[in-house]
Length: 156
Image 1: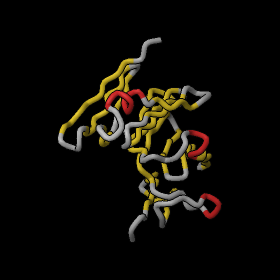
Image 2: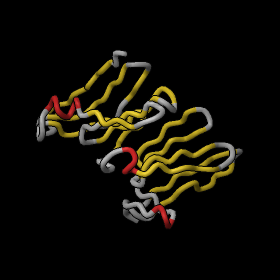
Image 3: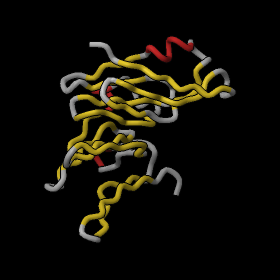
């Protein structure tokens, strides 16, 4: 079935379904969260990105919260990677070159990389990694002909 996403939980050799969706598009009121694209664990919380937004699934009490896309950024814009150092230091990276940072209080969109390459020249981020203040993001630019790895360091 096209668009089907499923998130499984394996615990004590038992497999259970945490979330599933029959569509790319979200309908949270009917427990449809759309396509899931990336996740990250911090302690006993799994952060999952879906078309509906950021889901925080809390182990072991089996509860979750959803932060809707419109509370984080203007739209989903193809989030491909969720990385971070801690729950108060998270980056969401989109395939279109957008970066959104969470500092524990607010979400901030950073279009520095997108603006650097210019509209139409940047093609796609493919993932990301983060350690401390260093971030590395691989992607394609210039009509998909050239690979690029963007490396950045935060200065505080």
